[in-house]
Length: 394
Image (tube, rainbow, N blue to C red; front, side):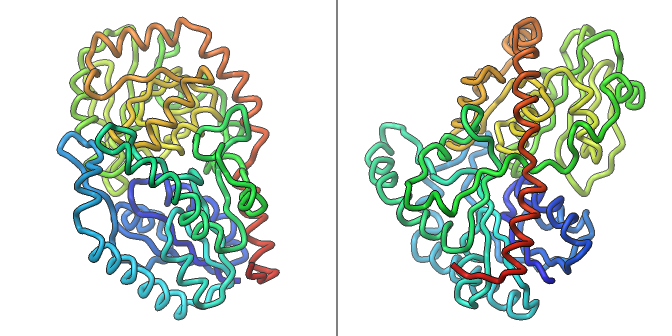
């Protein structure tokens, strides 16, 4: 059996969840990845076969804010169409050469279009079914217009294959609000499979054992700040956080990861703050900590829920999915939100104290019990195998 993975290469989350699926399937299948940008270095670090796809992305301001205006006008509709066609053409060539039994796209349209042209079974993995346009006054008319067509246009692309797999929780713990608005017409192909975890909590030693192993104190709260996402988006936040956390009182132990996959894992220590360029065993730190400070990416949020960790979230400005994710996490009592422009030592320290002294840690233990019932990794492997072996094209 041959399986072709084509994850979005923006940030680390898409490749990050495809890798454990590929590892499980690799025992009985030949694997090939197609991705671009940050995704390339991540696949190379995992030493998995790779073809490099033409890059695509969005415009970002110096502070990491998504520049919606520049994204819509640059490169413009003509060049954007050319880029999509370029991607589709590249995917057709790679797929024809590899001859897979199934194509797995993670949040990319071009592999789905290419696989459909070639008549190959295909599955799409998505964070959320509906794309949300920013509802600022100057974009309000565009947002209303876009919402009326995106479910039709994008929905047809995402559901053009056999299934859409969404690694999210059923209600009431659904993280992506866009998954609560799936039209009946598409629901038969859409499956909420639960989070895809490379390492589940019960595979690791106890929290106390991990603290001893990692050299973390047992007599004070441990804060874990794994910052991921596209380089320009996270650079501004890591700069602010580093300054703020350097001034944090000794009452807390803080571990920060800058999210560079190809960097070494040697730590830089400043009193009670330890900074890593990359942490390969991040799930050990996730289980060992008491609180997480991070962006509001879908993967990070669902992992924290599965590990029962309360969060302080700093969503990327203008990143509608992250803003929506953060609000959902706050709504279920799992997180507090701090807007990037308001992030400072005083505000963050107050938020940390409030979360740790609140009922949030207890609430997260309840959510964790429910969250761990949904094994997205096993569900994804099972569905992909069945479709690949059946070779049914819907």
